[in-house]
Amino acid sequence: MGETCTLITGASSGFGRSIARKLAPSRRLVLADINTEKLETVRNNCEFPERHLLWTRDLSRLDGVGEELASLLAANEVGIDHFIHSAGIFGIQFARANEMKFVTQMFNVNLFSAMEIIRPLTQKRVNKGALRSVTFISSINSRLGAKGYHAYAASKGALNAMCLSLAVELAPAVRVNAVLPSIIETEMNREHFANPDFAASMRATHPLGFGRPDDVADAVEFLASDRARWVTGQELVVDGGRCASK
Amino acid sequence: MGENYTLITGASSGFGRCIAQRLAPSRRLILVGRNAEKLEAVRNTCAGPERHLLWVRDLSTVDGVGEELTSLLAEMKIGVEHFIHSAGVLGIQFIRANEMAFVTRLFNVNLFSAMEIIRPLTQKTVNHGTLRSITFISSIVTRVGSKGYYVYAASKGAVNSLSLSLAVELAPVVRVNAVLPGIIGTEMNTDHFANPEFVASVKATHPLGLGQPEDVADAVEFLTSDRARWITGQEIVVDGGRTVYSPPRVPEADGINSKGN
Image (cartoon, chains in turn orange, green):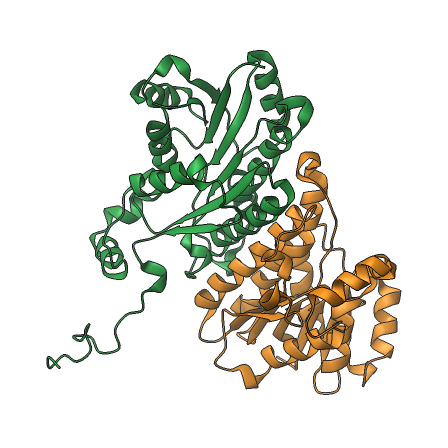
């Protein structure tokens, strides 16, 4: 077994990209996302680009995800010691218009792909016991209701509860935690932020003002490091005080 | 528009059956389950059996669930006022052996079928604004992790967040809440309860001892009634104190000082 790497899904944009840039100086990364060109761009903006690997994979299609990851690890003779699941899709859909195709795609990316990734990472013959931590990017929408968010909230609430049970199942070797951000401007929601009413309501509901992707990256870096060695099964809310003040 | 009904999934066993028996004297019910004989048997144990309808449907397949419910309501010219989602599948799986067929079945019954039922119930053309409450049966596994339960936990964690989001979306007309039971013996976990060590550990970790399905039915009855008119988006934990319990540090000492101080 060669080096160990930190696997980051959703690495080419939003939180995933921030996390990649933050960890690149001190770790070897496997950057995963749906588009190779965007992944290349992120890698080139990371320190030591030559040491990071790319995995181009559409996580809305589950078949073969586990097998392909296992092959990637074998081909590169690496193991994964930290898995950060930052891949996620977001969409608004009202309950009266619930459509399973939309729900399935969202759950595949946000939740089920993480299950299919963790499977090989916890198999001795594939990952040789290398895994040390799993960190999910969840959302405060799992705790605060909003119109049109029922499917997104459900997918994130599932992540939270899975985090708790996996923390117990995989202890003591692997710690499992979740970061729950409030809404932060990224590619996924740029149109919302362009709306002045929306921006004003954000300021009004967040005592610490607007957050940045780096705020999430800092929390993830902590949880995926040895400084969090006695922290597992936890939900770390990074929301500028929104939940506390609602 | 005819009469209004309370729709109960998972009605042929466990909590669902208990809830049906509890509500039958005062409401018209639609009992949902996958086995027609078991549903008939439950109906016959309910007060006023002739008042209650049966919908035989296996919720592990979600396709068509919404459409069939829509047809049922149209044919019978009725509306649904209260929806209680008690259908649930429990199963143990370890993540190193994650298998999507198992995950899909669990999620279909525990979560997606509920979404597909709620869809027509919130459509004006189908249910005519009749809906007043939704109550989910969730689980304390969303608060206390357990080996082998990550899939079941994920499906119930999804239910919890679905519940609170719908509470905001459907207010003020429809209240949405979840009941989180502790470990209670029903058909879903007879294997577990057949094991005396398991039963002993349940007694040991639930300060109020073993719970009964009636304890859950009581909570559901309250939430789905007018007495809970200002309660929405909540998780009511019915667990005999399990989630606040932590085993004592010193085996013999359950009080402050085992020497009697």
